[in-house]
Length: 226
Picture (spheres, rainbow, N blue to C red):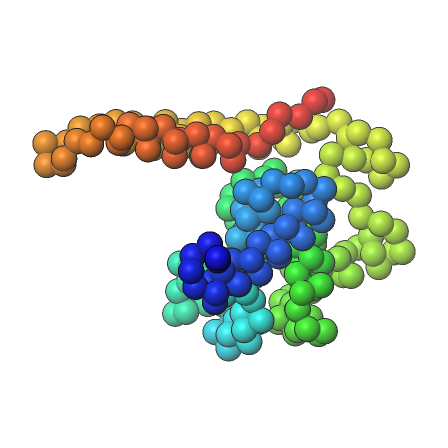
């Protein structure tokens, strides 16, 4: 028996999970929450830089559930938002909850993983709408290292594969992410425990709030050694 009793929905869930699993595997992890955050950031930052027509064409090949993520919060009256590569990276880092320095690798990794699922040339058509400087951030084939014949280094590693010493700017960015995550978790917990005169108090309200706060804390960046 299917999980929901509806074959169409179950198939959509399975397809979306396959894409997320492939993204997670490309990052060398099995953390689906991390993969989802990065995919969501990738989808939204690409979407907002495209025209309405280009978005409709690109999203047509996304799994149904990821298409829903793609259009979540979309305002067609404001696109395309012509932000520069620096602004793109800041938006990506904020939504994915990753250090700013890791954005180019993360964006290119998602691009490469998605390209395996889309028909040939489909993703290139969407990326072709972007300015060259922004495409360099997202497209592995357009990265400066690829054009020079080398291999882009992964976050946390130097060019020779040795562990990279984390910069002070990087450490401060991770600290800010952690503080923001803690703030969100505490705000969620406080809201769940607050008893308002107009609301009915249920015994499991505090449990639900604690569970949601824990889910938020699980998204905090992992500590790194320096």
